[in-house]
Image 1 (cartoon, one colour):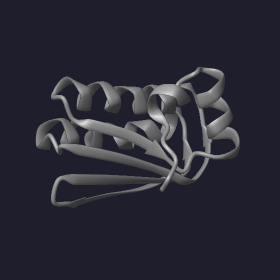
Image 2: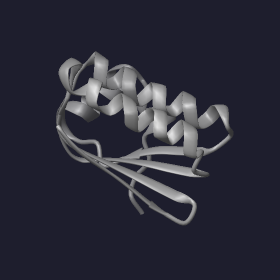
Image 3: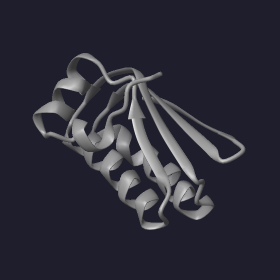
Image 4: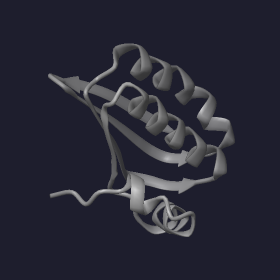
Length: 102
């Protein structure tokens, strides 16, 4: 997994590439903590280059969602496709987390 956190003004964009699974989520925890500390008003998670996600990865994204919502920030996941999109749809998280890029 490769990730990149970029902040511009009031928007933080986290790009996640590769696979987000139980092994790689460990590396993402400090990023989630940083988002919680910095409290950016808007957080966008870009999954356009994510090939695979498991339950641990979904849990990490839900954790980020809860962190951002706790301080009343805006949160969205964009770019999910193939297996990651199917998982979000199966869990019905697409209704809450996913947004189309416009």
